[in-house]
Every structure is written in C-alpha cells, then in structure tokens.
Amino acid sequence: MTTWDEELLPATRRALTHRIAVAQAEGRAPSLVAAVVRGGRAVWHGARTSVDGHGPDEDVQYRIGSITKTFTAVLVLRLRDEGVLDLNDPLEKHLPGTGAGEATIAELLAHTAGLAAESPAPWWERTPGSTRPELSDVLGEKPRLHPAGRRHHYSNPGYTLLGSLVEELRGAPWEQVLRAEVLQPLGLHRTSAQPEAPHAGGWAVHPWADALLPEPLEDLGLMAPAGQLWSTTGDLARFAAFLVRGDDRVLSAESVREMRTPAAPAEPADVVDGATYGLGLQIQHRDGRLLAGHSGSLPGFLAALTFSVADDVAAVVLANCTSGPAVGAVGADLVRIVAEAEPRIPEPWRPLQEVDPSVLELAGPWYWGTHPYVLRVLADGITLGPLAVGGRRTRFRPNGDGTWTGLEGYYAWELLEAVRRPDGTVSHLDLGSFVFTRQPYEEGAPVPGGVDPEGWRGVAQP
Image 1 (cartoon, helix red, strand yellow):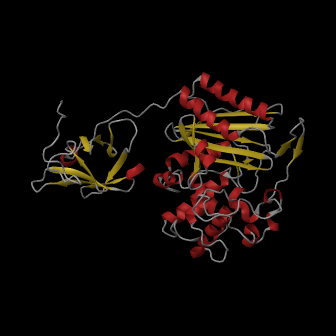
Image 2: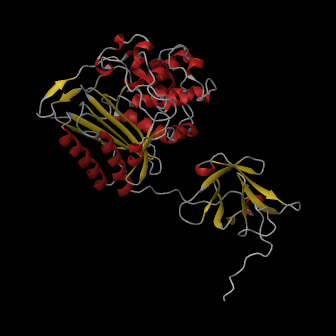
Image 3: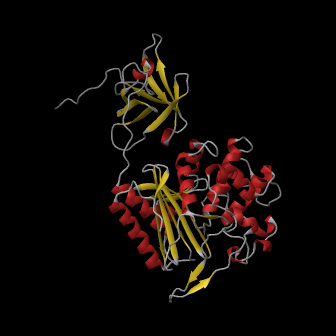
C-alpha cells in the first residue's frame, strides 16, 4: 500500500484509513482506493482490498463513470473561452439536425435542457455503443421531457450531444481532443477511454450473499462523453487540484469557478438536501461546508471526486463494484476529517502595497436608509456589507474609471459608484439605484422620496 502522508498528522492518517476500511468492509467492495489532496497536491493515499497481498495503489485504473462529464464540460468551456461559441447559443447553431437543437449549451451543461435521463432501451451502460450508431439512436423519437430551463433533470444523452459538439467544432474525435487539450497538459497520463494495465476488474456483489459476478465492460460509443473514462486516484487528485485552482494551459481560475457556480434550479428534494448543479459539477452543502465535484458509476464501478475550496481539501474514492459503499459520502467524510483535524492555516495578513486616497476616503460606515453598512478596502478589492451578521455582503472589482462591479450575491454585476459633489467631496454611494449615505437619511443627500426638513425627533410625552 502506497502512502503520501508526510504532512498529515498520524491521528488524521488513521482516521482516514479507518473511514475507508469501514466503507470497504460494510459496503462489501472487492477493493476501494482513495486519495486526499491538500494545498494542490496529494498528501495521502489509502487502499483496502479483499485480495491478500499488495493492495491497489494510485496508479491502478478504475472506471469513473459520470466524472467523465466534468472532463467534457472543461472542453466546452475551453471553446467558450476561445470565442468559438457562447453558452447561450442554441445547440442547433453549431450542431444542426439533432432534434434537440433548441436547447442552449449552458442548459445541456447544467442538465436543464429538459432531455430524458437515459437513451432508449436497451440499457446503454450494459450494451455496446454500436447499438446506437447515430445521435437519433441516443436521443430517441421524443428527446425532450420537460420545458428547457425550468428544472434540473440529469441527462446522459445531453452530454453525448456536448461530446458531439466538441467533435464538430474541433474536427477530431472527442477522446483525441480530450487527450490533447486536458489530459496531457495536466499530466493525467493514466486517464484513458479504454482500460490500460494495471486496472481493476468490475464486479457485481450479490445483495444477499458474499458472492461475485463479473460485469461486462462495454465501449459506450457516442455515449462516451457521458461516462467512458478510466482513471486513477493519482490522476484524479491532480484533476481535483485543477478544479480548485485552474490552470491557464487548460482553463483559467475564473472559468473553473464558473463551473462550480450553481446553474440549475433545484428540485424541492434537492433544496432539502442542499444540492444543486453547476456546469459539469455537482454542488452540495454538507456538514456546514460547500462541496463540489462529481460522482460516477457504471456496472462494476463506483467513483467520487469531492472538494472544498474554502478548506483547500479534495478527496477521490474509487471502488470496483456495481453497488455497495456510498463513495460520495465517503469522499465528503475524508474532506471533513482533514478539514476538522487540521484546519487550513490562513496566509499571513499583509497591508496594501499602495493606497489610493480617493478609495480610502470611502472606507467606513454607510447607511442604506437606516441599515448600517461598512465599506472595507482590502487587498483583493473592496467589500460592502451590513454590520449585522448575514445580509447582502458583496465584493467589488474596480473598473478603472472610479466605478466598481459586484462579483457575487445580490449585487453581482451591479455597478457601484461614488457620486461626488462639484467640489470633489463624496456625496453618496450609488449601487444599482440604492443610495448609501454617511448618516441615516442624511439631510441634503439625494435620498429617494426626500428627507423630512424637520429631521429626526422624539415623541412628546403627554
């Protein structure tokens, strides 16, 4: 068993090993492997196996199922970043004649295009891709079940369309494009469309007996962009680090941040579970932290990639069984164990290298009506938010002309401007038509509706 554990405390390593040991034993998995990433690199690897001797290490391939979708989404975002397409483009603009061309590329990425969850029978995961040689065979006669954009409905055929879109715009097979544009730049040399030794075999475990049945390994054909890939914990650890930080050779930090931003309306059950979907990434609020990543399954295999940006911790869990261990929950627990046992040490505070006096004079308290807010001038821009806990707190980036653009929350992409008097002093802040003043309902400020000229007063006692 190989370990990358130099920086984790012994108690943390033992807790991680205990968690995967329980998962493998109680889930009755022939083998289960896992890795933890912290600070952008793998710091722990563990394995449990039913076979005596050396367990699988970080170089053994497992099939990763729908984690493949995240790789496909990266290819589509690259096309967007190059200006080849816009996410709001209908599919028909770039890939005509599919029968589902009214769906936008963003809707396909977020599973909100209204398409069916699966292709027509027979079950595509256990039959050769050659049984579906055309997109019409994948989509069926009525590909759309719901109005587009109204609800999140997970769709494997939707990612088949995205893979075909990549092939159409790149003029090359999906696998070839993926290798050249993602796998090679990120050093994912053990990720492939077909299994490459050493790799695990896929098994079905009898639900009521400790007996095994080998699962067939099918080439998924056109469905490959939805679930074909094989990978290792070593490669997926590097991929997880990329999804946290970005890599300008593949996708910028801003683009991977967009991938993990909610893009789909959640079903009522999803709201209860704290789950939603971004652009090729699942997002969940669990144990008080925001997690992103993707799960995957194909007959004989289970997979999960999970990360917390705030904690800078990621986990990968792979097993070679059709059902059994809840690998998504295991991955979330591995992140939690490290984050709670060894909390992230923040970077040292450092003062600004230079301070713009015209910005510094805006720092301090402001009032929206009677609500007290505070504007802070920080190294990464300015923030404006209420003094009370919660509320509409937003970061802003400068536009270079004395205005700022909101980056998140209620004021995302709204314009903030410091409005000045003729003598150059600041009169008020204007944020999307909201007026912020230095005093509550400040006299002489352009407060909508005006300010009573008699000002603030008490109530006379009888």
